[in-house]
Length: 200
Image (tube, rainbow, N blue to C red; front, side, top):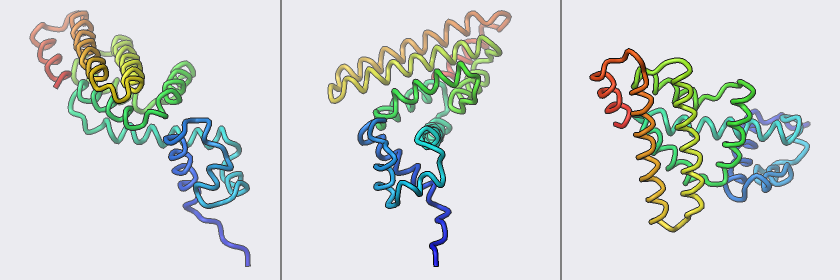
């Protein structure tokens, strides 16, 4: 009798591809390598994914879910920023791919759950709304991407890594203060309270 399909195989394939990405970067994620890592065959992959691009899309979705899981408990914008840097250092091979995907999704107007979480937190904790809120979130995301890349490049050089994190946190606080100060009609006392909440 033919074997019945494994309903959990899609998840196994995505997990296998993510492990390969973490170990060797995007070029290491070939369909043959994924099949071997997952303990299955290449034809089995094609039964669940149209091609490698479709598989990589699911891998990126899984990576985004992990980022969200890491960021959601953070009580402030600064805590979210610190957690993003920590998570990126733990998974250095994912960064260039996720940054590239962020840019493509932003231009296309696609959903970006982690970015949407940041926008929501900024709105809740600073009172900034609309386009200003999105602009601030983009500035913070860009700062996070660049800092994470620098910290990963620094590797075991803890001194330079710490300097990058310290200066980026200072820049983050300056961004929050500048955007809060520019929020017209917002009382100074509320701006100060929001800045304290945003920096935890």
